[in-house]
Image (cartoon, rainbow, N blue to C red):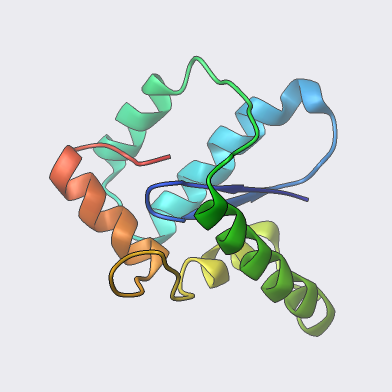
Length: 125
């Protein structure tokens, strides 16, 4: 699995690590599912999908994001053993409810995504 994490909200999207050629559309579909499940309006999701035509991959140098990802990997290692029937979407939604930093106060990624989208009118992915 590939775990993609938003630097802004820490919302995660989990995609199967197969067939790199089809990764982008599978990521876009997985993101759409996560956004739908956390209550983002369909029009906002469609706008985000249109803005995702150009995709770039890069390593993060943000140590806070790396810390969050390490926490998520720890959670996933446990969850994959305890909940083998969960789909990647189920796991991503579970991670979206885990409090994370480095905010002044820990925040929930799903709540932070909704708040940022309301403020900026788009997804912080």
